[in-house]
Every structure is written in C-alpha cells, then in structure tokens.
Image 1 (cartoon, helix red, strand yellow):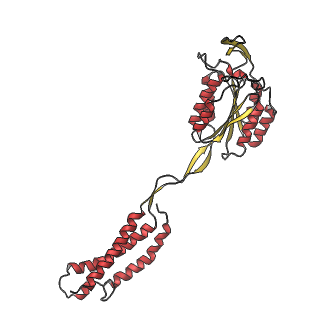
Image 2: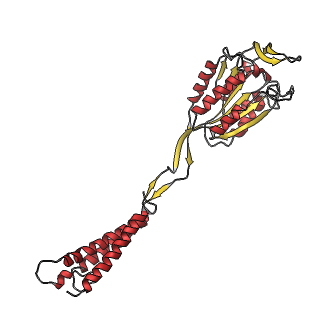
Length: 340
C-alpha cells in the first residue's frame, strides 16, 4: 500500500533518462562515459567493469527514490468497518409491582426487576454491533442511556436501575410507583427518531397496567407505527397473588402477599399495531427465549469510520536510493578523471 501512488508517474521521465544515460555510457566523453572506450582490445580491468555497472546503480538508486516518494506503508487498522447493526431502545418498568418474587425460581431474593436486568444484560452482551439505549418508567419515564455503542457504560447504568425508594432512605411517592407505559414508549421513540440504522426496535417490558402518564399506550403505539418502529412487548409475571419482600410499619421485614395485575390486552395491542410480537414471560427461561427471538431480527448495514494507523517503510527506500545515486556519481567521476 502506498500513501502517494501518483509518484509512480515519475517512472516515465526516469525511463527516458535511464535510456539516455545508458546510451551515452557507450560514448566517449559522456558524463557517465564507459572507461572501456579509452582502452584497447585488452581484457577489461576492474575499473572498466565498475564504469559499466555504476550507471545501472544510479538508475536503481533513482527508482528507489521514486518508490520512497510514493510512501510505502503497512496498514495496521482498517479505515472503514461495515457492521450489521440495529437500533434498540429497552423500556423497563420499575413500578412497585416489579418487587414481586414470582420469577425468582427458588431464589427468595430475586425480584422481577433483578431477573429482567440479568437477562437484558445478556441480551446486550450478545449484540456487540448494535446501538442500544435504556429508558425506565414507573409513574414517570426517564432516559437512563441514549443509543450508544459503548455497551460497557450501558451495562453499568443498567446495573444501577432500582425501584424508587427500594435502597435509599426516602419513601417513594405513590406517583413514582405507578405505571406510565405510554410515556415510556414515547420517550423511546424520541430517541429512535433520528437514529442511523434503518431497523429500529423497542423492547418494552411491563408487569402491570397503564395507570399514569400524559400519553396513552394507544397514542404511543400509533406514533411508533408512523415512524416505522417495531415494538416488542413483554408481560412479566401474571395477574394474581405474588410474594413481595417488604418491611411493615412496625419495622419487620418478611414476605407478604400482594395482588398484581398484568394488562396483557394493552401490551398485545401495542405489538400488533407496530408489527411486533407480544410474549407473556412467567419464567426466566421464557424471557430468555423471547429475547433470543428478537436477536434474530433483520438488521441493516452501517459503516463506521475509524482512524487508520500505518507503519511507514519509506525511509529505507529514500536513504538507499540517495546513497546509491550519490556513491555512483562520485565514484564514476573519480574513475573517469583518474589518469590511466
């Protein structure tokens, strides 16, 4: 690979000059005249052989200079990387019902949110080339991470997602523990609107029914359809009684029964409107399988430009060519002018 390949055009005058020089080398009195013309029919000496070979050395030296000027180099990094990429926004419900332990599979300390975070982390790690972002919603929706290829930062943010008031000293308000599905989806759409990949997807997970927010789920689904965004909805758990680890008003921590309500009709309607799929996941295995199904979606090619690094090899060619031309000129001049 060469940095300046147009420098090889110099081989045109080089060829003409070499032809002229080698032609004149056989003519007495020329600059690079062969000393053999000054001798009789005797056997050529080493000086005569040197005078015949030095013009060729000069020609090769000039060729080496031209190659060095072209900038030979070895590429250490590709200039453009093509990748099959997908733009994915994950919308995770962090309402109070995500404390339920019905997805724990025997682990009494694993809440619905803990299971979701673990499997979403696995999903992100398997989608190395995708742009992925994160939105959480309870009574309010907030962007935790915009679309990014920096999955390490995204996973760090995901690990810090908690249910409001779960691990801090304050009590969560009633509004924070509600479920605004429409707002969560709307915030995702705002982030996907100008994304580079053509294939844009929202993975929306909720375990409740929409009972808060400024945008209804139906309005958000229609907006997603207009933008060409497919929404894959996941209903975590089911409607019924679920165990929750909590602290009562007397300071006692234990397992309590709570009533959970999963609005599958709303989630199913969102998926149907946008061309996505709805899945009710009542175990980690079902959620894992559904996320794997999403991973098989059609992708779009994206080109990402990266800085290229090269190792130059021009110096040996330039130095060698310069020394060859210089030494041949000086030596030949000395031999020609030295008395026989």
